[in-house]
Amino acid sequence: MSVGRETRLSAWIERFAAHFAEEGIPLIGGRILGYLLVCQPTERTAAELSQELEASSGSISTNLKFLVNAGLVTKRTRRGRQAAQYRINEKRWVDLIQRKLDALVSVRELTEAGMRLMSGDPERAMRLRTVDDLYTWLATELPGVWERRPSSSR
Amino acid sequence: MSVGRETRLSAWIERFAAHFAEEGIPLIGGRILGYLLVCQPTERTAAELSQELEASSGSISTNLKFLVNAGLVTKRTRRGRQAAQYRINEKRWVDLIQRKLDALVSVRELTEAGMRLMSGDPERAMRLRTVDDLYTWLATELPGVWERRPSSSR
DNA sequence: TCGTGCCTTCAGTGCCGACCGAAGTGTCGG
DNA sequence: CCGACACTTCGGTCGGCACTGAAGGCACGA
Image (tube, rainbow over all chains, first blue to last red; front, top):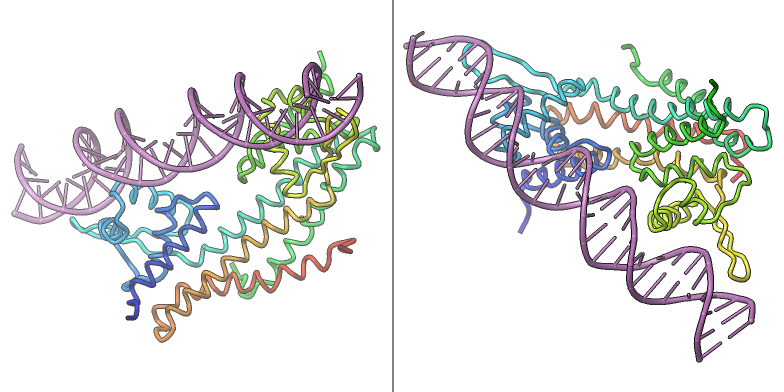
């Protein structure tokens, strides 16, 4: 007996959300992202998301606010009593990755500050220097990666 | 009135630990790393770390185990009743960064699985495709970065 | 075999963040 | 002005992780 497509999609969304949960994005937020990436039609109201993902209206609201603020989801309001529509803003996914890489490189500021505190004592600075060199290397390499991105027109 | 060097070092260690705490490393674990990077002499016993960092013996033990397991700290045992000595293994810091980057790239497996579920429906796959392309690009660029690392002899 | 440190393990505690759902706010049509 | 609807806010609950400190285990010297 075969498994339905929607069932497999739900499982995929769950795996997707689980991955980003490890990176600090709330489970429900990750589910919203996964769902909005593959749902048809592409736009959903908060109420629909609440029902589809079996999450409370409050959680949906909080997480949508977070995702809209991060730029990953776009809110479209409509006249009248109609509910707002939310859709994924996949173009901004690159920002998510950029932030990740920036966080990595930002350690360099810490190691540099540490090196300054160690100035005048080269012997003692040796261990920290190894780590500092590593982040300095990262900081010089990663920007180049972005330049080589196809359609990095933005 | 000037601030002592050790005081400034303590503050630096705290900032250092705070940064890695955001990345999931327990606060005390981060303090151990920071301390072992700059302490003189370079080796410390668990008891010394406990006193210096004002943490319980249990916490020190748990975190040292974690750090030794991750390869960032090396344990050196000695004959007799003498306590084991711990020192930073700064050469392995590169592994820490590697794991971070691997985690980023591993999302590609998720997007690829999603794309497979969407096969036969190109319209619906468009949003996910944008994200998938992004991780595919990352997966092709990042390995090259490692090759350009100075003394990537290991 | 016993005593002595050192370290690890583990049950207990506290804290923090995610989540829920009801109450509140705002907005619109009637 | 009122009712209806959508969304947000907020107090309360729950679960999980970090941390503590005491008890236990281990290795060694005597």
